[in-house]
Length: 375
Ligand code: NAI
Ligand code: MG
Picture (cartoon, protein in one colour):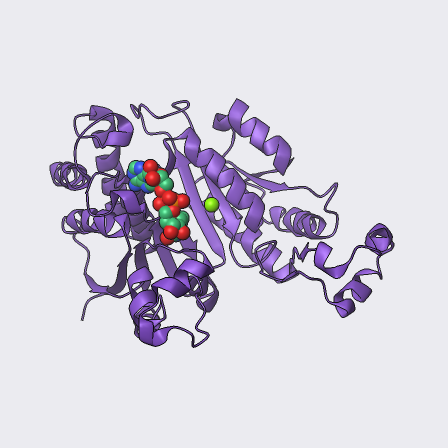
């Protein structure tokens, strides 16, 4: 029996293109792994009324981790129109597969490294090497929202005197989205950031919140962070407000190391940071829980490029590197990263976004070659 069982979910559109690239490279990574393909995405929504069929959830439960491509999702109206005729009108609702996986497996830490590899023409500067650790399960993306706002909810909100000025707003003219933090949620994401910093020999951890305004939720995060920081005297602890952080990231991104933030703030600073080092073609990510992990590029299925094999596979290949690190296959993770760095620096094989005209698979083959050359 193989040492690792890895679920492979290519999904839709360019998810398939970049997954083919990943498999070319994994063919040259000599770990004892079995790769098991599974169904996910729009195709299965249309045919089966479920973009994440139960058999795929079963597959995930039976594997050690998952490599994920990308999926398409569309607004409700289109989702209903594209359902197979026999499934229409039965009240079947579309639910995002990736969000469901994150919840089902409690993948609370979204790790998004942003590093400028030497010679990448898309770099904003050449000395950026930061990692965002984003809380992935609560905060403003908890999905607890009201519109129109029911009477009971409004009554409860009126317990806070600041609600007074909204008291005459009619229910359908009022919308409320809740930013929900738990102490446990704060503690585990902060701890993950410090553990990541220690394991990867990082110098500092910066908490990115806004406790001067969002006093209760951001306040809880900062309080827990200050306590946990004391357990890591070897790592510098910093606090920066999210708005200022966006400014500093544009001004001095090279000064930052590990950044930790709640769900929405993490989402915002990771898109900003990704663009500093080449954009979607380079943005890799890991979704990590205590017992399972999923690795995916952050880009979507880019339908207009689907099956054309012209998009950049680097975000996917860097996600494979994150997977190898998580599996504690450090030597292979390093080899893969070195290979990626060499291909970028040499600049002979590049996809369109980097100004080249090589294919997705050409890039993968070149990376594979550079892995072999390190033997
Ligand atoms: P997208 O990320 O798919 O593409 C936006 C644009 O970015 C593309 O048209 C392309 O110009 C560029 N791009 C993306 N990946 C690239 C790569 N690897 N190399 C070079 N250029 C690249 O975002 P969009 O168009 O907003 O969404 C398309 C579909 O993907 C939607 O159905 C959306 O819901 C879904 N989506 C899925 C995600 C996931 O699976 N985790 C994440 C984001 C969007
Ligand atoms: Mg985003």
